[in-house]
Image 1 (tube, one colour):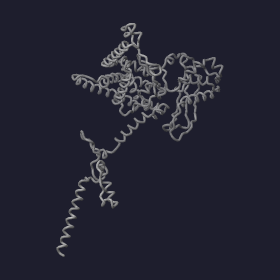
Image 2: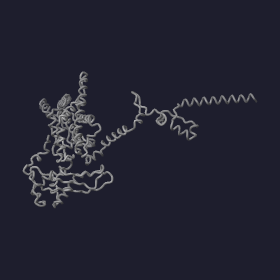
Image 3: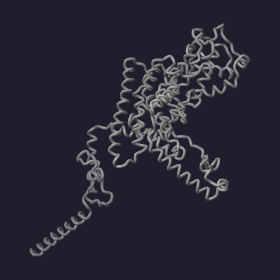
Image 4: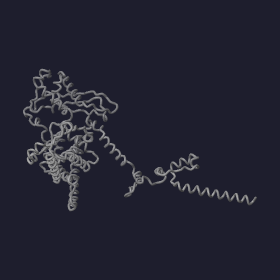
Length: 530
């Protein structure tokens, strides 16, 4: 099935001008960059600086002046997203010597406008630019080119997302970045309580006018408590994932993706068709429906009666098997296509399918529970995080498909990797990998702990003798014989003495009595012989 058109302007191309020659010629721009030995922080205006440099080089190539108006016009009609940019990253944070940008004029024909036949080199000046296109209409578009923002916005009902919102919610490392501090709205604008129309009708005129009276405050508290009870009852109903709704969501999701920025150029129609067919396939629709039902039973509504536990457990197992089978079917289909037709663009299809599943789940939850998001926004935010974590646990426990390689080298990704939350999560994964990479012999030295008892680290003798730590709760007294030589000290340090102090004192007393008895016997024998 052919994917839908990416924009309304692209769909309105006149067929009469399809074969007309274009006025834009192929251009190869090589921008030298400062080489860096060590990884450095990418400046925040690097993307805009590269775009401005590309526009200046193009204007120099056609013999036009590099005025701000001409630069804005070039960025409008020759966007960088349509060009082929050579990767300039040798390692993370390091820049290559040259950044190459190739301009393809065949993909730049403006829809709805007839391409101008080349009549020599066009030379732009300020008067011609101001007469043809107003500057006020060009400069805002230049500001919109900053970043990787999609022109189409994902909108289903009351849910509205951009690709940047999806990226910061579901993709690594963006979702682990430290969020910016939000201003306190109550502190800035004062406390304001929104009263519904039904509540105002129930109150008298005096109570409605005197909002600070105890009667009005009590009525507002009752109204808020009633809304909370309604939101709790609302979450007893599972989200409705109809086939038409899921297909509409996937159509909007496909139109929202900046495919050119993700490595899927407009000339690669085969890969785009494979992505769209995978999104609207019955396996993907069934995967969304099974995942939403499974998350409702395991995360949203977990309190069930004793009679329902057996039935709910069986349904959970059936849904889990269905989720695993459908996702494995989609993965095997895409991996088979990548095996037979080796193209690097196919590597982003599985992460995009998982991203579509996450967006579908949040969209259906927001559409099903509007009252909960209105009166319990903080609780629902935690619920959305729990849903995303459960999806990762089901389909992507190692976070292999929760990232897109084309977005890893952006400035925003570098800032996200430098945040404290990302470093903490990375350190946790590093420690986990270190434990599982140790040998089986070392794992055998760590026995399983008994129930209700503390774990013994090592119980072997010989090389593991250093694990027998001294008992610091009891004070030990070193004997003079052991303190006189150096070797016994070393042995005592390796093998601490575990004999109690009371036993040592009793042994010393018995030795002294024996010595005194022998001395008295020797003295008596000498006196008798004399």
